[in-house]
Image (cartoon, rainbow, N blue to C red; front, side, top):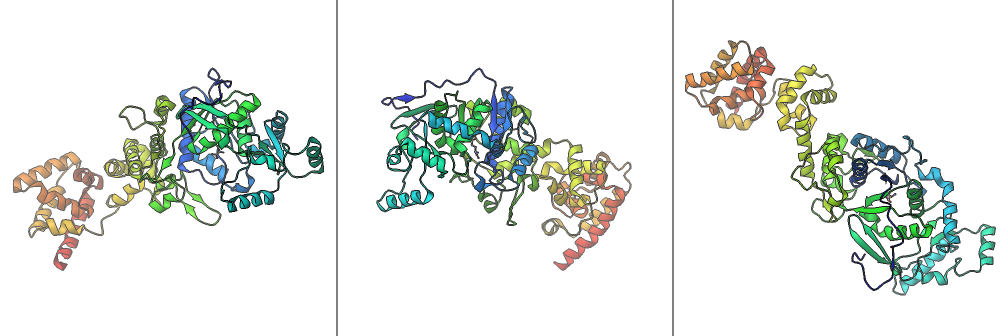
Length: 527
Ligand code: GLU
């Protein structure tokens, strides 16, 4: 597709003026052909942000005119995912609004008159060729060395349609009920020129476009016709959608002209690329490369599972924040944005043309930051939700306080901080082999004696006692603290030992030291 306007040709565009003074109304228009891929969620998000930023309306419209690709459950999945992301539309199926219904199959009857109007205006025509005849045509053309046969301004002159048949013949065939489709009558050699908000001027010559089917023999419109009719009837001001629809935009532009309707502004978003930049991020990539590409789990009818961010433990805010940056940036170093801040900061002129590389590590980083930013009280509630028999919320809050700097997901708190729930059963062998010396057991027993007499048993008083113990024994911190940690937690690293001790309480600390001494000495003797 030529992105530079060519000076030579006659342009078709100037007549269509953009609606700039009308209220902002944008739509997300997924087809329920499966779960919503991350790229689809990003399209929904950018529409949502654009609407909020411009005091506009965000609409969801389900485009299900292709009944052969309909997947049961997909619509519910889409709505559920958007709800989880916190980007619910204000008009849509199950939500309401003055422009409904918002599912195209429920609007079925309204499209035919529009298709017929185009035929009347000589912008479209009836085509009676059967699928077999067209397959034949394609095959013959392939054999003649032309693999890309198209129904277009040249080939239509030799085919069975209302541009080649007489009006009487056409009327007779229609009356007889001969199956037909309605095709766009693409004019010859005209440059279609339109300005895309993200891509700038786009110029396409109609000689490169085929006569797309607008209305099918099953009585349903195709995506192209239904999309334009609905965008018009729903008073859509901006069409914000994925780059894969850019090749359809010239046809859409022509349809607006044929109907003499105002054309919405177009903004085609960059593709999402695989982490190595090699090609489009596809639905198969996710589980193959070890990260989800769907917002929530999707179970296929065949029993396959495509994993989702929600079930992996991501917070919706982190997922949305990460997605916002796949193709957009605020122009400042700030990376962490709440949804409200994104609404405030988002503009389409900061969306890039170039494909956006998905980065799973950066996605984890966002999640880590969100976990750290979440109030401990909320984390405690989430943690309780992950446990079969949760501790009291106050204890869980302390656990979250201790562990959140080291965790990415709530589940990490449970696994990495398991010693906060129960006595360790294993002891880090590296710490044992590197740090456990002949006199360690004696030193730790003495330290145990000190602990026994600390009251109140708070992290401050434990820390003060620990420091004076080291000074008195003339020992370095590295000779005692890792061993103290080892006995209490079984690990070689973790949060403040003084806070851990206070959380466990004196009795538990003393008993763990006893148990630890026995186990570590046994380990030592074995080695
Ligand atoms: N139904 C199309 C899709 O599935 C919508 C394209 C558009 O937004 O115009 O993505």
